[in-house]
Length: 87
Image 1 (cartoon, rainbow, N blue to C red):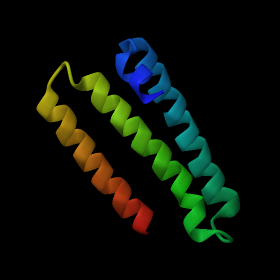
Image 2 (image 1 turned 45 degrees about the vertical axis):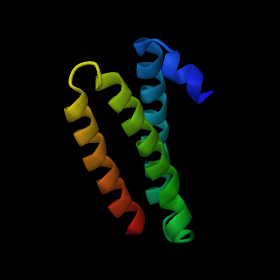
Image 3 (image 1 turned 90 degrees about the vertical axis):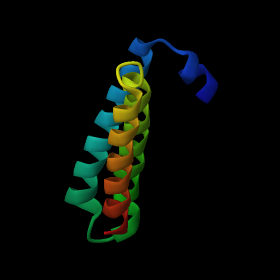
């Protein structure tokens, strides 16, 4: 599956990034609103994992524009997600 995504067109990657972004936002809202008090760690891992997938997809999308800046943005975002997961 990952090989198929690598070979996919940019439009498919953009759609996948949008789907995972929507999943991340909805799961973050659900986690904050309904689950945060009961399952402290598990509630925050789904949005973090979804945002990590979005980060990697956006990095792949932006690589043709400027490879170094795409990787730098991905690195900063993944660092922030790591801090969010540790919270």
